[in-house]
Length: 528
Image (cartoon, rainbow, N blue to C red; front, side, top):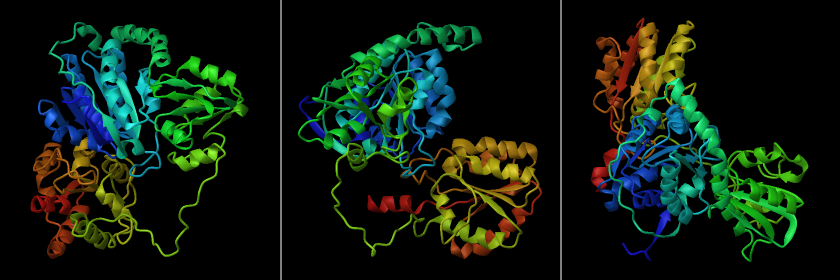
């Protein structure tokens, strides 16, 4: 590889290529916007033919597989979106106590403004919660460079590293200069297997070690090149900018930043830098994408009146940062580029023409009108769009797998009919355990497992249970004669409606599997 080579890369692609060049042996992930392109890039890269890549059943299994690879001394990357951190949390939190052998980097892609998510949670709180170092790139170049640094840091500290990005970093492009490629680690199983057995006596010892390591982590944040103190001539304002907010700040001052500022891209917070800024400047403005993670820590010990940010309304409390709201917080004027148009009509998202989920909802809507107060508990996927017109077919969507357990809870409370709608990938991600609960309780509920043979919402990745759903449901205890497969097409509507009525009226758990390939993945072979 030519070290002078430059590539135009998405933030996700820069992270992926940086991980390849850092010598990873495996990447484990569950697809979720805005993190999906990282794993896809590695899967398609000619430089990563010896890297094991896998779409896992969920984020927890991805985290655990990475720990297994770390145990034998090799480097592993784990990728997920922010809500996936909730699923991976058990393994993630405990990995900070067990520590690692081969380097482990956990990539969490946050989604401020909820472009494709249920919430705006900030993954930096997970890193603080676990007491591990965190990295947050401010540019695609830093995203690439941080990967080698992160894996080296992970192995030197023997702890996992959390790398946090946001949607704009993931999906914007910039030129990246490449660095030397490191070979993969040789296999070298851990020299301290007892630390991996988290019996209370081991966990207590390791927790003390983790606490004792904290001052060193702060010192590393003071010394790293990813954090730095910019000394400006105007001390009326000091600015703290983390991650991509550093870009937004500098974009507003093309001739040079006049104020003193602290750039933060490695955590825990560099206390000396922040203390110096507070002492030298009259006021402080905190620019961070996501929740007021830095701002809250500053306000814990300092006078609220001298700190501006999301908590006092200087910046919006919700939604992502952008150059314009940063400009307003700096007291600068925004140029009005476009006038609001009265002609352009909003286009809400909709299921694709020809999608099998459409036929499922058409049949379901017709049948449930025959019952008083039917409730349809849905889940995360393309089919969630059934909440919108013209279908208006679902009543809930909370988190991955919740459709089944919520329908079970309603049925347990005496509600009928209680119907759950879940997709194939979501079912294997976190729906199977809920179905087992329902079977064990003999709950009177109907599950519609809408199988389009792929993970459609994130671009058509493999679905873990394809061609095995009947066997899985029967293995979990659903009566075989109440596991019904239909083909969702207009010509089959009478059959689908009849089966829906039969299974809704069944006094127990029943599963209906409408199966037809996603219209988008059907088109791909033709395009190719």
